[in-house]
Amino acid sequence: MWNSPAEFFAMGGYALYVWGSFGVCALVLLLEPLIARARFKTIMRRLKQEQLAKQFDREGSQ
Amino acid sequence: MNQKNNASFSNNRLVNWFSLSSPSTFYPVAGKLIPIFWTLTAVFGLAGLWVSFFVAPVDAVQGQGYRIIFIHVPVSWMSMFIYLVMAAWAGLGLVFNTRLSAMMAQALAPVGAWMAFLSLWTGALWGKPMWGAWWVWDARLTSELILLFLYLGFIALQASIDNRRRADKAGAILALVGVVNVPIIYFSVKWWNTLHQGASVSLTKAPAMAQTMLWGMLLMALCFWMYSIAVGLMRVRAIILEREAHTDWVRQLREVKS
Image 1 (cartoon, chains in turn yellow, blue):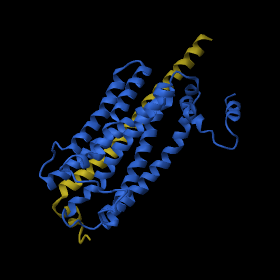
Image 2 (tube, helix red, strand yellow):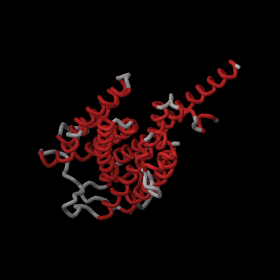
Image 3 (cartoon, chains in turn yellow, red):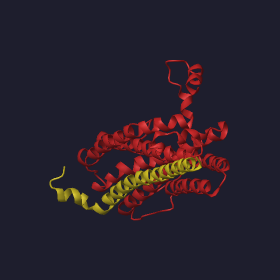
Image 4 (cartoon, chains in turn cyan, blue):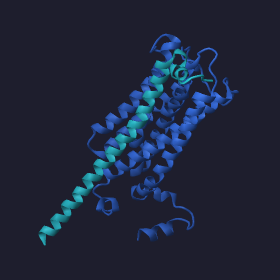
């Protein structure tokens, strides 16, 4: 179907539209999990800090 | 004690599905499921892209430009489907007051919003070369834009109310009222004379396209489906921890203690 890589990337003259669609889609599918992971890491850090604070508290009061 | 309760409540040997409605039971299960759904996303995605670019033939009318269909149609399907699932979770939470249901709805809203955005974005990039316009106020396009606003409204409403239970209730009502928009989007091309073309895939008629094009679309749809589950589970785990931060089971988690 494609005779050369250049022809593939040219997409029969529709390069801007086809790659603009697939590119932004790939970007979103990459970004969203990163945002979700950052949210998870934030709450995990907070929970660990609270745990530590409580531990110090207990050791301090003994 | 928990163990004993479960055993007497469920038929032994069978999995007790109801216990999964508890955040503490669901949290580790979700963690195990995430890599499975990422793997499926990659498998279906690679297969779908292969078919989209190297198997499906060039279109007689639209040339290579039609290949946008392989993401445009699946993301549009997902934007509507995720909305229905989100509204169902929100409704369950409203009726049964189960904590996890509201969290599920909250976790799905951003995924759906991104799908609606991608549907509009790819639609604009497809409309420009084929119709000569990035955007027209046509029934299909307008109702899809309303869907995006419903998602954003749901997210904003939940974020603006401090009381968690009230936020969940308000969000659920908004989500349920918004369901009426989904059939409007779906049937808009039938009910109104739209610039947007009719359904590409129909359950009642033989598909009006090459078999390979159909396969490409279905594989990509499966890819987006698995992706939505994977990222939804990732987000729901964060939400569970945020909302249950004060509970004992969260404090006892091995990840938290180490």
